[in-house]
Amino acid sequence: KVETNTKHYGDPAGGCESDEQAIQVQGVSGNFCSPKCSGSSCPSDVPDGVTATPQCALRSPTGDSFCALLCTPSTWRGNGANGECGTGACQAIQGVGLCTYTAANLGVTFEFVALPIGTTNLIVVV
Image (cartoon, rainbow, N blue to C red; front, side, top):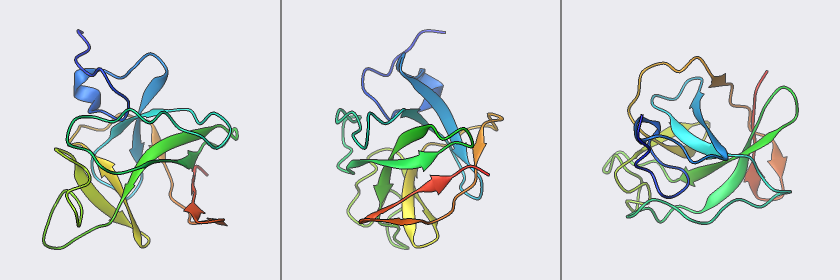
Protein backbone atom coordinates (compact mmCIF):
# COMPACT_ATOMS: atom_id res chain seq x y z
CA LYS A 1 0.00 0.00 0.00
CA VAL A 2 1.31 3.42 -0.93
CA GLU A 3 1.35 5.87 1.95
CA THR A 4 -0.21 9.21 1.06
CA ASN A 5 -0.01 10.85 4.50
CA THR A 6 3.00 13.14 4.76
CA LYS A 7 2.12 14.43 8.23
CA HIS A 8 1.19 12.92 11.59
CA TYR A 9 -2.41 12.25 12.79
CA GLY A 10 -3.73 11.43 9.33
CA ASP A 11 -6.32 9.00 8.05
CA PRO A 12 -5.01 5.42 8.33
CA ALA A 13 -6.60 4.70 4.94
CA GLY A 14 -3.70 6.72 3.49
CA GLY A 15 -1.10 4.90 5.59
CA CYS A 16 0.46 6.08 8.85
CA GLU A 17 3.92 7.59 9.30
CA SER A 18 6.69 5.13 10.28
CA ASP A 19 6.48 6.20 13.96
CA GLU A 20 2.66 5.90 14.15
CA GLN A 21 0.06 3.20 14.46
CA ALA A 22 -3.62 3.23 13.53
CA ILE A 23 -5.72 3.65 16.68
CA GLN A 24 -9.43 3.11 17.27
CA VAL A 25 -10.86 4.24 20.62
CA GLN A 26 -13.69 2.21 22.15
CA GLY A 27 -16.94 4.18 22.10
CA VAL A 28 -15.72 6.51 19.36
CA SER A 29 -16.42 5.89 15.69
CA GLY A 30 -13.51 6.09 13.30
CA ASN A 31 -9.76 5.86 13.73
CA PHE A 32 -6.59 7.91 13.30
CA CYS A 33 -2.82 7.57 13.07
CA SER A 34 -1.13 8.09 16.42
CA PRO A 35 2.57 8.50 17.28
CA LYS A 36 4.01 7.69 20.70
CA CYS A 37 4.54 10.63 23.03
CA SER A 38 8.10 11.80 23.61
CA GLY A 39 7.89 12.54 27.32
CA SER A 40 4.74 14.66 27.28
CA SER A 41 5.47 16.10 23.82
CA CYS A 42 3.89 15.20 20.51
CA PRO A 43 4.89 15.88 16.89
CA SER A 44 3.35 19.19 15.81
CA ASP A 45 2.92 18.50 12.08
CA VAL A 46 -0.78 17.98 11.37
CA PRO A 47 -2.74 17.33 8.18
CA ASP A 48 -3.71 20.30 6.02
CA GLY A 49 -6.78 22.10 7.38
CA VAL A 50 -6.33 20.79 10.94
CA THR A 51 -6.00 23.38 13.71
CA ALA A 52 -6.43 21.02 16.69
CA THR A 53 -3.36 20.86 18.92
CA PRO A 54 -1.69 17.46 19.35
CA GLN A 55 -1.68 16.26 22.95
CA CYS A 56 -0.31 13.25 24.79
CA ALA A 57 -3.73 11.76 25.54
CA LEU A 58 -3.66 7.96 25.07
CA ARG A 59 -2.14 5.31 27.30
CA SER A 60 -1.81 1.60 26.55
CA PRO A 61 -2.04 -1.20 29.14
CA THR A 62 1.75 -1.48 28.98
CA GLY A 63 2.13 2.19 29.94
CA ASP A 64 3.05 3.50 26.49
CA SER A 65 1.62 6.95 25.83
CA PHE A 66 0.32 8.08 22.44
CA CYS A 67 -0.66 11.42 20.93
CA ALA A 68 -4.08 12.48 19.66
CA LEU A 69 -5.78 15.56 18.32
CA LEU A 70 -8.29 16.78 20.91
CA CYS A 71 -11.19 18.90 19.69
CA THR A 72 -14.38 20.56 20.89
CA PRO A 73 -17.46 18.55 19.85
CA SER A 74 -20.30 20.50 18.24
CA THR A 75 -23.83 19.63 17.24
CA TRP A 76 -23.52 22.19 14.43
CA ARG A 77 -20.22 21.12 12.88
CA GLY A 78 -19.10 17.52 12.48
CA ASN A 79 -15.41 18.43 12.36
CA GLY A 80 -15.35 20.33 15.67
CA ALA A 81 -16.79 23.59 17.01
CA ASN A 82 -14.20 25.57 15.06
CA GLY A 83 -13.59 23.08 12.24
CA GLU A 84 -10.38 22.05 14.01
CA CYS A 85 -10.38 18.47 12.67
CA GLY A 86 -10.18 19.54 9.02
CA THR A 87 -11.54 16.67 6.90
CA GLY A 88 -11.86 14.47 10.00
CA ALA A 89 -14.71 14.25 12.49
CA CYS A 90 -14.69 15.45 16.10
CA GLN A 91 -16.04 12.50 18.09
CA ALA A 92 -17.35 13.31 21.58
CA ILE A 93 -16.35 11.18 24.55
CA GLN A 94 -16.68 12.12 28.21
CA GLY A 95 -16.76 15.87 27.65
CA VAL A 96 -13.90 16.11 25.16
CA GLY A 97 -13.49 15.16 21.53
CA LEU A 98 -11.04 13.23 19.38
CA CYS A 99 -10.36 13.95 15.72
CA THR A 100 -11.01 10.72 13.80
CA TYR A 101 -11.56 9.44 10.26
CA THR A 102 -14.18 6.98 9.02
CA ALA A 103 -12.78 3.46 9.06
CA ALA A 104 -13.43 -0.23 9.47
CA ASN A 105 -12.56 -2.01 12.73
CA LEU A 106 -8.78 -2.24 13.15
CA GLY A 107 -8.69 -4.60 16.09
CA VAL A 108 -6.67 -2.07 18.15
CA THR A 109 -9.14 -0.46 20.54
CA PHE A 110 -8.42 1.90 23.42
CA GLU A 111 -10.84 2.41 26.32
CA PHE A 112 -11.29 6.05 27.32
CA VAL A 113 -10.95 7.03 30.97
CA ALA A 114 -10.61 10.70 31.88
CA LEU A 115 -7.77 11.30 34.31
CA PRO A 116 -6.98 14.82 35.52
CA ILE A 117 -3.30 15.48 34.84
CA GLY A 118 -2.79 19.20 34.74
CA THR A 119 -5.10 20.32 31.97
CA THR A 120 -4.82 17.08 29.99
CA ASN A 121 -7.19 14.14 30.06
CA LEU A 122 -5.70 10.75 29.33
CA ILE A 123 -7.29 7.89 27.49
CA VAL A 124 -6.28 4.66 29.18
CA VAL A 125 -6.41 1.17 27.77
CA VAL A 126 -7.73 -1.35 30.27
